[in-house]
Length: 503
Image (cartoon, rainbow, N blue to C red):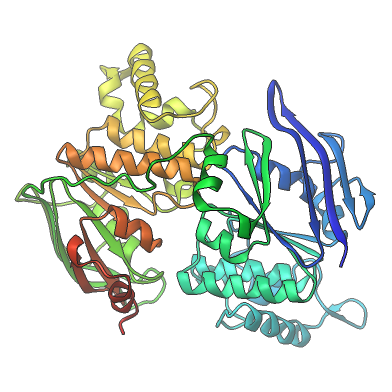
């Protein structure tokens, strides 16, 4: 159907840092090109140029749509050219309805100036059906789950009738079922001649959806190949610039005694009154064990661990550490008992965006770097530099803002925060969401190291291959209850999914 997009010889600098170095990509009508690479490789920067977020004149190079040169000064210019962006970070107005969010800025009108509410809701229903989102167009967005909000963003983009969809980690907040719905949508759009640029760290999705795969590393285009001609190993090697012997560096560790116990924990539903999202749940974590928690979105996984950590209230249940009953009503108390939690949403509750890399890293260990209530800068520098080296953190100065780091490196800073505190129980809620393959492998190695030292590790993950590869034991939550428990020798993907769905 002909060439839709060409980006020629793109250079982008931030001060002395070269973020993009002579990158060129192209895209035909009805084609899906996957853009892959580690965090910080330049993928999002390239797409911000295409979206107009980085205006013409702030970069070098040329953009052509339908072989006509473009000079986008704003995101509005890009949208006018038929380009719609779907970002990993959800941006919706929580106190507007689903339909109002979908058509914000382009409401259907009657009499030329009055919003046609009837038509708006009728149109919204049509696009909700396309993405398989079973909610009322009149529902407030605040009441939707993260997965539902992401599907709404996709419906909103499709409603604009774009020529090109750019999807930046679109499935990071989606369930496995919703992921498959999205892949089907992209294929249907492709059949209609609509193109897509698909950015994802989930490589199995890339092979399902892409016609071609382009790999970026350190701001340079390393390779572009037909998906059918690429192997997973060769793609990973292009991404990280080295061979990875194994994706999941799991080691067998002798399991010790019970470190932590939760008994009959009940947590109220955050949105529905008089209903519990976790009901009478009990489990143990042993020393040297990685306990996986599986379940679908809404099963209560995050609510369970946040209640244990004291971040949200539970209405019933007891917790024990080393056989002794402990009472936790706040995260500060959990930290005193040497429990750490890497939260699902690192931007909301994992990092402090106004603080530096160093300050975020030492936040949970202020007592260890201070004297008489005053921070000793030499201790702070020594501790942060040591853990930066240990975790292979990629950064500028330690005094740079935490937001200057890629998502994977931000995740490492949060991990360093808990390792510096010498916690005994570390709870990881979606620790590899939205981070690249290389960073994932490094986090898996850290988990194994912690287990070998006799710590207890709890990992929540929506990626079943990750759970199966790294866990010693898996409990499965469904509708707030434990629907199954599996030891490593008994792991079965189908049985775990059956337990998660309650079938």
